[in-house]
Amino acid sequence: MNFKSANEILDFAIQKEEEAARLYKDLAATLNRPDMKEVFESFAKEEMGHKAKLIEVKSGERMISAEKKIFDLKIGDSLVDVKPSPNLDYQHALIFAMKAEKAAYKLYNDLAQATDDENLKNLFLGLAQEEAKHKLRFEIEYDDQILTEN
Image (cartoon, rainbow, N blue to C red; front, side, top):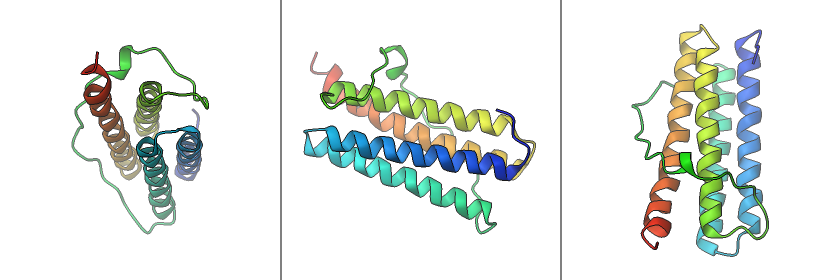
């Protein structure tokens, strides 16, 4: 990643949030379980909320600071990657979501390291922690619903 300005970084992050929202919305549409459909639709809305925050930051209307570090259960770290498909079961949907949130977390940490602007660095570290919260929610659900059943 080679960005020439803070605006380029923000544009990139806005695009990534749009992609994540679309991914969760598309995944929700393929799931048969209404509760999981609702979870993924909710995550799509959260990602659009991140996009809105980034747009506000870009326009100078808002600043975001880094939050406290979120605990990582690392459940998804050792699981095999899953691709979204219409026949995705609950377990595999959770694995897919954990992996996607981990990738978003890494992206924002990388963006934080790519800038010397302290405000942008704090913004990206804050967004990384938001993604870590999402991953933790999926890990807890996986632990409660999948690991305890086996």
